[in-house]
Length: 366
Image (tube, rainbow, N blue to C red; front, side, top):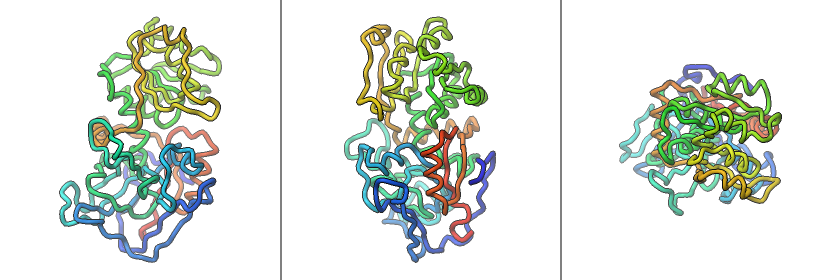
């Protein structure tokens, strides 16, 4: 394991993109051992059709979804043998003859829902890399040009690899509902990757941020990231009331609700009269679903809006904001490609502050 990168591009240029391709595959469910490394013995893949591109993956990152897929708890069944992980970033090394959106050398990532370009998602656009489509835990990824987006130039490969799920989800939560104007209050819950991105994006949009956490150390880090106020939810179980007190009785204009069943009651109590609650999670290991007491529900006219990542347009809009403001995602730790199982175990066992990333530095013959 190595520490998270601080700035600049940390990986060297590709020198042997023709080397045989290695990739991990989900061979069995029920545990990390079901993810198996294969050496194809074959040279770098070619574009799949005239609009295909080949990406030399430089880094990939883990999401909670990837653990749910392993345990068959994810709503969308994974294809046996699929290459895991939705999130990654890399360099275009080959393009089909009809490709117009990218050129060799471009820095790109793949959208979480590759077939969802804009507007509302449709039932035929639910495919996801690392689940029903091959993902990013490989030295090369073959995708259609319409599935990919450019990533900001100032980001390291490791930072760029964190964007497709947590980053886009946070951006969509903040920008996908009623306009969130500067000076409004945003409430974020905990220190998961979506919550951390939400703190950064809310500050970027000119908002006041109130965050919840469970420790003084995490409170300090949230403050350094941009949170204006932090409430310790263990010391203050009725943190919805505390948020109202911090906002002069008005409540939060937007709650990025990443806790779901365990926290929705307090989120509603913390909401402004006409607040928005962007709800990301609806089930948990301890509760069967969302329950809100009559007293809490009657306390405001808040709107609850479900959010599930976002479209390619959301991704592109977010990247423009990230680039314009020089925003840097929070990376907790980086593991080498050969230690992917270690990365999974660390992500599952620990409570990282930021993303857990797998780097392909040293792959591709470098």
